[in-house]
Image (tube, rainbow, N blue to C red; front, side):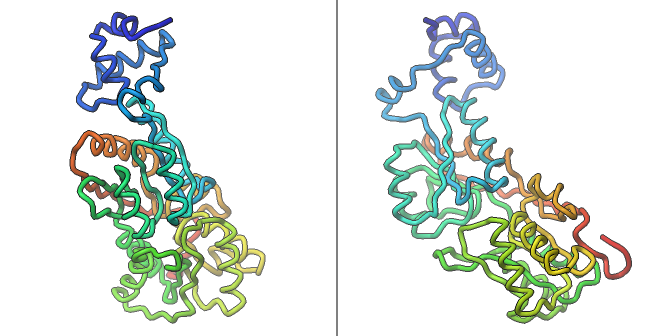
Length: 333
């Protein structure tokens, strides 16, 4: 049976260093960490996680909490979480939840050591979880010193996207976005949309804003939202969708009704998932970090578990131009 001593001998380090690497200890150089992990892999060494859990009263498990396991945006984030957790000696699981209290109770019963929250989370749920677990949020700042956040300025990103539509000659611009039915605080995409219209001197009516139920992100929602919009009268030449899946669903509904994108209606999505590049037409979308953000979240979470105060990181966004926006000034954007 391969032991820590065997790994230490092959890597040229002490058994204590092997233990630190396998337990995810942060203050070890990348060169030493890589050497130990390579030696462990070559020797097919597997640490006894059950014994370590009993000793440390830890499960060596991190949870990545998502509202929809089928959404490619969250899948890409989890890839990063899984990779970094494995490097740091932890096991990562993806949990789908509606973020209601009953679901949060189930999460804490799983005895994970910490959690990464993806998607918008109701304030009440954040407060409940923060009392029980170290947390890192990937959508909004958490007002607790032991919790961290890695976010983008979604309001600014939405504003830039709407301003881009205005630059292409669009004067009546709508949005497909979530409602606040689940206790979420704020809607930065909607706020950015309204701010951009004001900056560009454009007006809007309530009929230009289409809501879907918060906490869900599917193509079906976008499809149903667009069908309802068309039925009551679609009076915009362009729209911003809350995410790529919603935008792609909206394109399908518009196509069924004989409304072509971008000839008759221009659309911009959010997230820049792989699906955006292969939709028909290829979807212009606001790019958000995904796999790299998941890896950063694990590092931040483990720092928090080591007793460091939670930190806040703000990432940049980028508008990826494809073929779903028509330039009304002449041609296609």
